[in-house]
Length: 259
Image (cartoon, rainbow, N blue to C red; front, side):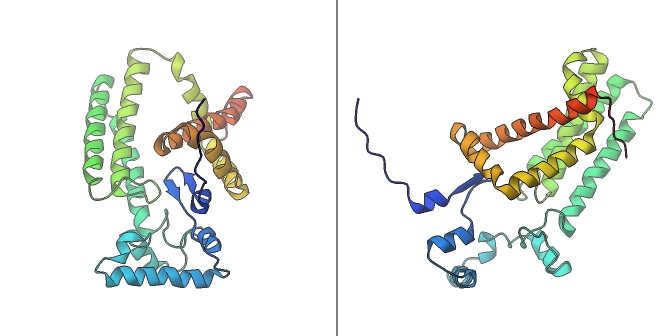
């Protein structure tokens, strides 16, 4: 058995966090590591780095979160009334709300398509065609406007609407045309109380975030077994499976909450 010498883990690596978006280092924790006893002193360093970037001929806005159009509009219109956790971007700000409205309109258009007097097969064909076109449009927009759920970008709205059209068309074909109904039972159970399950998921996510359990579980269970993207996927699948439990309990007790 060969002896191996493990390199010591640097303090910077110990502070590294990982989540669905990838790896990051919180500025306030870095400030402590660099022996800045007061945040305002470390904030001066950040401002100097921005100034240095500008002096070197680079656009500082391209390297910081604030450097996007959505934040600029929100800061001009909303001022300090931004997302309280970030202060620099708002997933439900002025600009981000516009493609979110488009998402709702896509859903209305899908409903109108299903109410047409055409045959079900014809409706499914139109849904699949519309889905492929919307996904292609979203992928094309991703070249200069990345698909980003948190900012609800236009590319995200287009791509996800296309995916929804295509999936709904595929399920209509499998379930209503071919008659395969048994495997969709879990989706039916989740769909009986969608808003209730969503609220439970939001409240539980707040609990995990406020207690630090989100990062602890994610880093301990998912990060060691997969790449950042796949670890994020596994976390989402596991969390969705967890939310199936209250949905199943409500289904068994015949509790259906309607608004």
